[in-house]
Length: 401
Image 1 (spheres, helix red, strand yellow):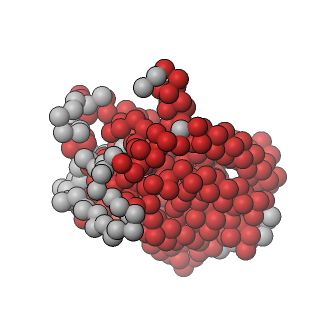
Image 2 (cartoon, rainbow, N blue to C red; image 1 turned 90 degrees about the horizontal axis):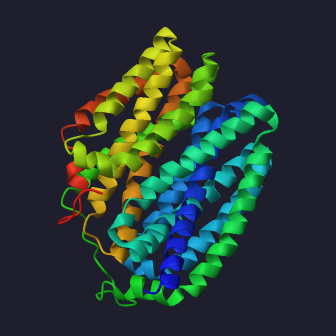
Image 3 (cartoon, rainbow, N blue to C red; image 1 turned 90 degrees about the vertical axis):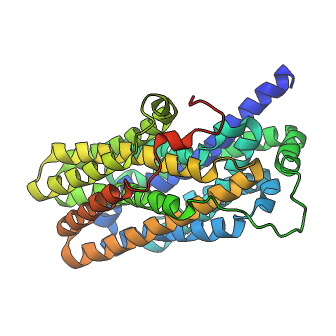
């Protein structure tokens, strides 16, 4: 590979990672806006949960359709189309009506479904095994940027924040789509070789049975518990603590949760070298218990600390389960396996979020939060029995980086 080709490969990897992260930016940017929408539009807790459930429903539907290694050859086009759909979702979200907001969430889910496996396959095809965690790291990086940016605009602009959030995202996504299209066109031949010829076994029109890992069920269950904890915390915590009058937790908790989650994901390879026995489930259990305590006894510090611990534990545990789930897969299989993992764990999280929304309407946000985070603490503690440790994430024959 020439120096120019190497630079183009690295540029493509950065752009693909950014394109995937942009989907998570907007999917999470709405969460700090939910207290604003609840006040302006008088939305129930169930409708608030639908902003997540409809997104995940569309996401899972598209991921399920694309969970086949044959679609890896179309990864460049799928990723570009996902950015176009994402821009359309922003334009719907600017209109402050419940139907438009929910329609936007469906489009965000469609964009995520188109882009998840495509981004994963492109990155692994370009840089190899080091790209296996792109879908989990991109999730968290995008979520951090979206949540922190939207919360900052809410703090500065109040009820006027939604329009700048979505119009700004649309502008960035449009520029990114144009630049990415140019780079993908320039590298179309190397990408085709990586995505079509690397496996040597895939033929156009041939039905392929994709082998799942031996521990698929426990890995998907661990990922589902982790993603449910993250999703419930991000979607509902700002509204829960706004209703309880704990404004410091409302403003800081969700953002710090995602920062901690992203930091621990990035640190996981190094932690695998010094603490290979580590599982994120213990931190997740302690964090969920701390949030429940914060709600019962009105302890803002416990709320912030608990959300940070949930983020840190989830950052380790979700990435570990994804990496183990795709360990040893080739690039075309990587995209399909990443789509399966995302589809199942997101579906588990959607069911949990819908239940929390309905419960909150019935008994109020406070009691629902205590029951929900208490249950998450118990589930995460039980998952220590089967969730992967960091030592399980090391590629065979490789040392942790």
